[in-house]
Length: 454
Image (tube, rainbow, N blue to C red; front, side, top):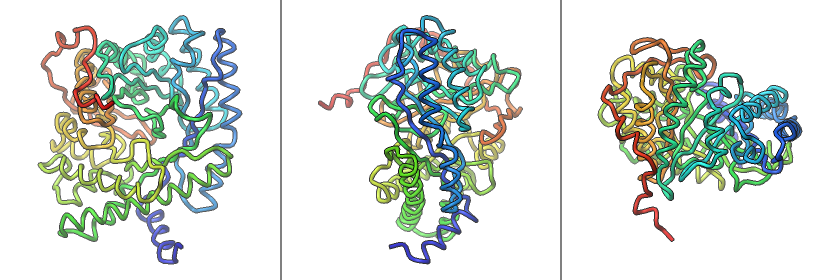
């Protein structure tokens, strides 16, 4: 039973420590929308999304009001569109028409973002995959709500370096087509290795092909809650530190479990997972960097940062799995450079570099996230960074991702402004030495030896 003390404690977490349910995400399978005619395909996609998603926003708002829990975003994820459009789409323009249909459907039901304009090319690309990837720049430049992702590798299959090379150019072109908005299109594009099927967080969300027809996933965020808890145990042992994080993560996950089950009941859609990811906001005190500093670092990026982040991620997951039988998605700590002040300050002060961030991705929840780089960065360099992150994910059997934003017309020391939850980011320097000859090699990097588990 929940006692009065726990009720008051949860209220404090919400009112003073910035606890929120970051997103309720409705996953929708579009496999049954497939059609050989692109016009009919668009009609069927629009009809299914608007029918199943028609009550998502009002339900989220009602739950928030009834329980007093802030629910920041209501989103939809869909089956990777390269699979749905394979029979109808013969040109990149056909895929762009689907992106615009998705955007129209998202606006109709009033959600914040729609994810799943995606392709899964872990081992190779079909014609449909390539057409969708080639359409991404135009699709993201001409829509507002649509988010895109491409999975280029996995521990079981290796890394498709042809796709990695292609994505370097796609990111640059997306940046160029949205140059008037500080290359905002790239903020809606993620390149994954080991992408999870049940991720409710944008921009990398899609509805996995192994999922049911529809499912409710919830993403919970609580950096401010963890930071507040650690303020009370300054100077204590690592055992006390770990127990504090774990207990706090348990409480945060229980809030997500409550919201997920209630949304599932009211929408009559099966409950999928709770993703406990410490996803930050631009608000002061709601930063993973500030958690790391509460653990004893002068600044995020100082020696010891990777170890501190490893502790945080591990204890968050241990607390989460005790609170819900269905913890999934990414579940851990996001370390984006935009979106929150602690990381931005660390970059400005020289404590945090791209190379240190890459080291931190070995133990964090995702990877190089929301990092603005100079607009003249070559496509091959972008591809090289993607390859590095994919290799970390492949070898360590974890999800890694890259969301780089080459800000056209700007350089190191300047700032890119994206607005809203995406915030702003200082433009970080990138290694100036070339990897062209490496990236130009054809084929794929084989799966590591420990992938053979049959």
